[in-house]
Image 1: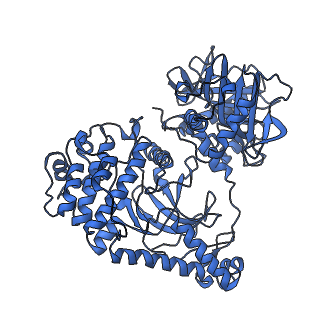
Image 2: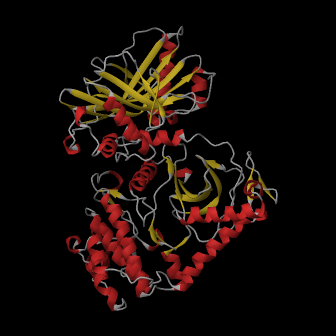
Image 3: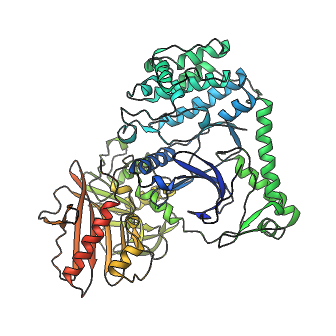
Length: 633
C-alpha cells in the first residue's frame, strides 16, 4: 500500500513529483513518483541519517553505476538519478508485478512449468548482467518481480564490478542475503559471476518447494551448510532437479553459465502459462486498480505548487483528458506506459497523482551528474565503433586506440602525430556559436579563423546562467571534420554514457555540494545569487569576493614550487602560486593515482580586498570543504 508523505517532506525530487511511500528498509526507502511524461517511477533514497557515513553514500553510488550499466528484457534499467545531491536518489519506471517472496508466502510454491519459465527469464537477466562485467551478488526472492511479461531482476545495491573488485565488495566482505549466498561469499572468498548461478539454484529451490535449501536456525549454521553440506533436493520435481543441482555445485568452476543453463532448459512450450492463475489474478487486480484510479478524476489527488493536496471532479485528469473520451485515452495511455516499462516494488496502489506539473528543476542537473561520472574513454569507443573515417588519420580498429585519463577528467588519445581530448561537462565560456548545428544543437568553436590544425568544437548542454557542455579538442589534424564527427557520435547517448567504477575519485563529486549558501554568505556575503555558475568540476559564487571551487586532475608534481600552509586542524595545504594582493588561492592534494594528482582548489578574488583577510577566509572555506570530501582510497 502506498503511504502518504509527511507534511514536511518534499513533493519534488529531480524532475519527478513524489506521490507517496512504497516501502522502507535498513539502508533507504522507495517512493512512488510521476515524471513530466506521465510515467510512474520508483525513487530509491538512502536514509538521511546514513548519508554522513561514507560507506552508505559510496554503496549507493555503486548501485547507481551498476544499474545504469545493465539493460535487458528481464532486468530493471534506471531512468534517472542524482548521486551528488544532498539526498541522492535513483529512479526506475515500474511495471505491475508481485515479488517472488510475496508470491510464495501468499500463494505457495510455483509448479514446474512456472519454475522453468522463471529459470529461463533469470538466466537471460544474469546473462545481461554478466555481459557488462557485473555480479549481482544478492539474487533472492525479494529481488525478483513476477510481471505479466516475465520475471524482472531488481536491486543492484551490492553488485560487484568484476573488473574493479575493490572497495565495498572486496575479498573479505560477506555482503548479501545469507540463505542465498554462494559458498565463496559465505567464506569471504573472491566472488565471480558463478556466484550468481549458485544463488539462482537456491532461489529455484525456494520457488518450487517454498523453503531455502540452506536456511538454518542460526546465521552460523546457514553459512556452514552453504559451504559444507549438500542440499536435500528430494522435494524438487525430477524435471527441475538436474538444472538446480548443477547450479548448486560447491565448485564455482563446475556451475553452468547462464547460456549453458538456457541450453539445458531448452525451448519452453508455446502458450505455457508462466504463472499460476492466482498470481495472474493478483497482477490483473493491480492493473485494474491502476486503470480505475487514473480514469476516475474523483480518485485523483492533486498537489498544488506549495505541496497542498486537492481532490475533486475539476482535477487535472478531467481538464487535461477532455471528458469521458479523454479519460478513456488517459486510461489506455497510462496502462501502456506502465506495461511497457519496469518495476513495481510494492503490491497494490491506493492513490495516484497526475498533477499539473509544478515547476520542475531543469533536467540539465541530472545530465551534468551523468557526464561528471562518465567513463569518457569507454564512451568514445562505444560511440565511434565502426565509424572512424579513413581520412581522419585514426585507425578504424578501436582496440588499438590507447586512451588515458591524463587530462582534466576527460579522455586523451594520440596517433600519427595527432592528439585528441574529449571532455564532458567542460567549461565552454570562451567558445561562441558558428551558425551551424551538430546533433540538432548549435555548434560552438573557439575561433572560426583558427588554422584547421587546431580545433575546439563543443555544444552547450547547460541550463540558463551556466556554460558547460561536451568539448572536443583536436590538434595537428588536417581538418576539424573528425572533431565534429565525434561530437555527433556522442550526442545521441549523452543521457546514458558508460559510468566510471571508481567511487573514491573527485571526478564523481559535485563541487557545488561541498559548501553551503550560509557558509559562503558568512565569508564573502551577501551572495548575488544562491545558484552558482558551474561546470562539471567547478563552481563559482559572487559576493564581496568572487569564490571559485575547483576539482582538478593534475600532474603528480603540481605545482613545481609548493608553499605549505597549515590549517587549524593540522591539515597541510599549499598556495597555488598567485602572487596578487587581492587574490588568494589554496589547493589540497586529495590523492595521487599513478602519475596524476587529484586536487581541490579554492580561490577568493576580492579585487581590491585585503590579502590576509582573503586568505583567512580561503583557509576557513577549504578546511570546511575537506571535511565533506569522501575518504580517499
